[in-house]
Image 1 (spheres, rainbow, N blue to C red):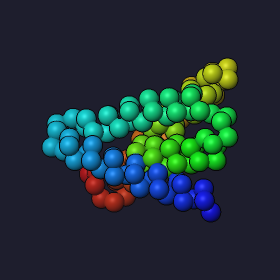
Image 2: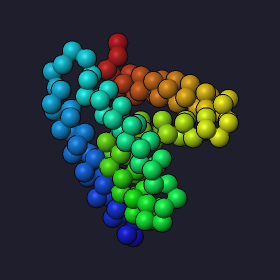
Image 3: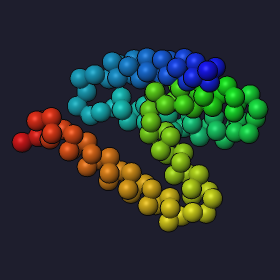
Length: 122
């Protein structure tokens, strides 16, 4: 139950941070806020996991609070990116490339289908 509370606490913080970044960049011609949170989230997850993975406190508190919670709510792109990097680092190059291509392709198609089903695309 404590783990769920760590995730929820971190998630609330990450969601508020994402909202603030989006609010600061609203009205821009380019989705700068989304680009920023995805890039910052990827940098942060790499730094956090690279620095603390395997440490007892990190596995019990840090990973749920910061990785699943804060960064999970700030951007799920960070989780996708670190998964791809870990596959690559494990020497599973075909899996890493397949994961990236299929994730981007499937997600774009799913977003377009959802949008069309909702009546947004003509």
